[in-house]
Length: 117
Image (cartoon, rainbow, N blue to C red):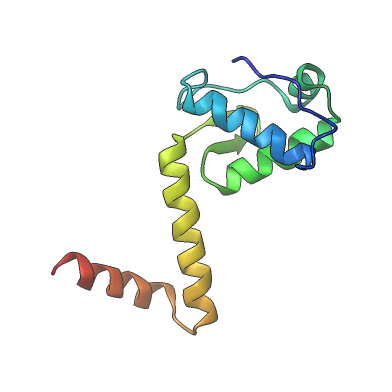
């Protein structure tokens, strides 16, 4: 996987640049679903940032559904960016529904009723 150094003079936060670099590598097929990523320490060294910056970026990608962290198995790619976008939208929908007072099963029922049309 080819990861480039981030631009520390750019207005975009470093952890967001790191997340974007990893996202790009996955989108370009440099890291396939099921493949392990290098450790946060190794990535930090290559990218030229603190390991905590990399860890923050990895957590964002995990929350997007792109990565999975498993103790003893490392950090693995679990989805493609397209799936990641879908997962992000689903998470946003569920957050919105919760704020509107809907339970998970009610949201699922609404979605199923739309699919059956």
